[in-house]
Image (cartoon, rainbow, N blue to C red; front, side, top):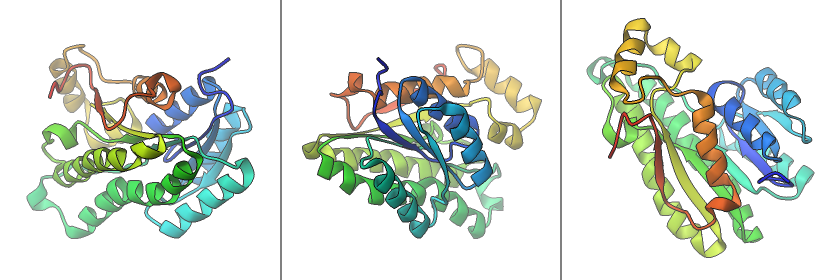
Amino acid sequence: MGKLDLKIAIVTGAGQGIGRAIAERLAADGATVVVTDIDEGAAEATAAALGNDSIGLRTDVTDRDSVTTMVTLVTERFGRIDVLVNNAGWDTAEPFVDSEPDTWDRVIQVNLYGVLNTSKAVLPIMAAQGSGRVVNLGSDAGRAGSSGEAVYSAAKGGVIAFTKATAREMARSQVSINCVCPGPTDTALFASMGGEKLRDALTRAIPFRRLGQPEDIANAVAFLASDEASFITGQTVSVSGGLTMV
């Protein structure tokens, strides 16, 4: 028996990178995974590789109508939602004084409003069930700040605070809500933000002397999504190889 047998799990932004690794781990633990991504082809390809009747759906987390349509399809097909992983994110690296409001809007819409939109649609369903697990993906940038990522840090700081507040509100319904904060992780997004110089500098700075792998994040998410974490809520867990200890 898997830890998540018969559970229905939604993972946003799961077409690649950390999201895909999370979807793979949850499926390996027995969950039926609803893989959502703005890239429909990537969502469907990931879902097809998972088994367990998993499905892929194009969803834009910045669009409330898109999120509502996805959640309606999930509840009509499966009848319940046991796990929500808010993973979808986006960033670009630049000094704040050189950034423009259009970029701020996109960063905040994807990273913060995306979490608000999915939570607004899913939390009432979990409350009615009297059970559920939500894992929000924050970032160590939201805990300690990150040069070149000021607005992203602000958005992820908001995710951390939102996690704690909603955890308090939803506890009476036996819904747990926690936050996993990745440190530097070896993904395509990371590669797009810096070259080997950045990679080498961070590798030297991380006590474990390596970047995180998507599977490292997925392992923490899978634990918090399982019944093994049934008495844990409102917590923020850094998965950073010790880069931040705050």
